[in-house]
Length: 124
Image 1: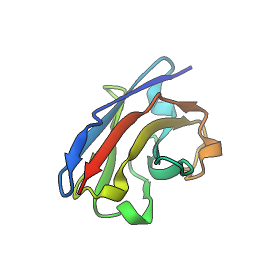
Image 2: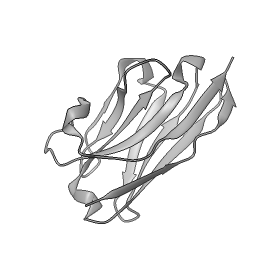
Image 3: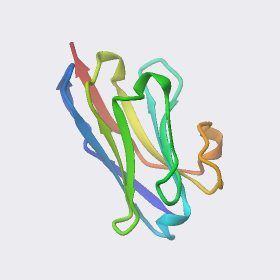
Image 4: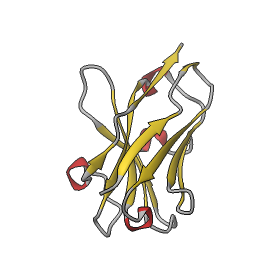
């Protein structure tokens, strides 16, 4: 089983950039579709981005398209989320997740493994 550990969350100002990392250990990382989700206070956890095994297919939440980029380095067992032009509404705990599905899915129920989350706070 894969264990996931996120890092990179911080308090930043609107317009700033951050890069989140998710390091995986355990079973072969390259066999998992990887995703990022986020949960703001009082809200449901929502899909943010996902990437296929090889990295050639990505999907994004509409509100982050053009600002966020998901990528992975299978040699380093790490998936990244580059976040540019951050907005206060991006404030949330960001979770890394792994799915054994063969498709790049956006529904959280398809993701079997989760990290502990990393806090991103964007001040206006």
